[in-house]
Length: 239
Image (cartoon, rainbow, N blue to C red; front, side, top):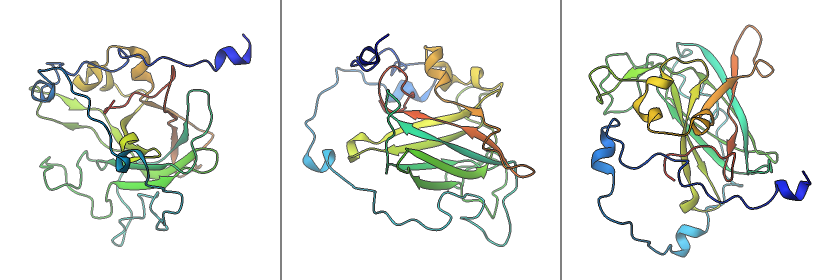
């Protein structure tokens, strides 16, 4: 196929994302709209800025093993998560703010509303951020999060996952998604994942083991590429 045919405009597939009302995912019942949506014009403050290219980062902002250090290292399986942020044609998206947050190895978030019985780790904060380089690459070092139960069904568990936020050229283009780990048997059981009808969309959320990036005798690594538009785009929660 000629190169120009591969670069034609890809119409947005509205069926790629789950329906707003998915009763097995209990909180969607209250959150799903009951009336037709209303289009609200965006203001200039929503369609421009901020520019993250000059954002100052701390030394360990992308290293969750060290950025909440209180005299020791966090408990759990040490991993590296890396990838590229790109468009549908593989063109890198440089200088994009990538933020992530997660539970600790026991499946508990450092958040006042998390009452799960697993203990907090005094050396793990669970948040990090990075700016993509000129090739759209990002990298984090962290602990593999643990699964945890949640109040959806009698015995529903969230698979191990990491939340990602990708900030585009304006506030209104911020996108949020989740990363899951390949081979996790809880993925097909999760009511949130099951709300996504397209199996190809689910695959865009699953990070693959990447031994080429692993640190021998230290960290395994997972690759998670984020595609922002088109036929190969990553599934996002807020679109």
